[in-house]
Image (tube, rainbow, N blue to C red; front, side, top):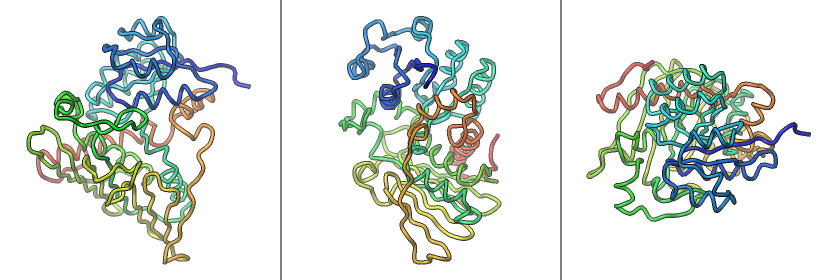
Length: 358
């Protein structure tokens, strides 16, 4: 029998994924939402209604939220540019923090977040939603079992129609010109653009598949859409000691992968010394090709249960057991992913290949 019910607070609603994370807290029998905070009351109305929160649980001052609700864990969903500042604001309250992807707007900001949490003595987790797709978890298991031999290439293509086409729980919205002009997703100063939004997915899970290996150099290119100050399409090539890997991000896919897989399909293709594997978003099978099955076979994806079902369940389980966060949510793997992102962004700006930064 569990010793406690975990009290969780959600702070800053810049990213619509806050609704998805609060949904997971709400659905867990051993967790409860004790408070939410954002400077804009309107951005919290849907969450308050959906999760049945009282007015006393809704705050416009994050400090009042933390002081009055005394949560055991905090979820942060600020804009990418605000990750470091918000972790530095909340860390002194001495609570474990889960930050929604990406890690940060820069490696410098990521290191500020690490330093703030080190000073607080509490763990930090970076949530990458792709980590919870059964196809990608199954792929990591097969890689770990040696089914592909040594991983030599990771190919990633992912994105969606664009961040303004949907909200929490994937509710479809209309991306009007006014919404685009007002959204931080399309503001360079706020860390907007498809590269900073999606590249970390590929480089972080790619680092997971590569067993923590770092590339030697990186080259990248971003598109330059007319009338926008951020990219909607980027391609990054990373050279490792064992070969080349490619990571491509796209706002503007023909369809969203959670409704109909676009072409190219969103997800990964992994090539090893003894086989290949394709693991696409939302698929119920992965396709393995090896010496015993050169024609390729479809394998059912693993069923994710218990603490492996999602980020909140996983993080609370780690906290209960006193065990470190591992894999893509860990600082170690996410920091390597951030190194690649930083190098790619700088490479695209300078239009040349660069050695791995940091």
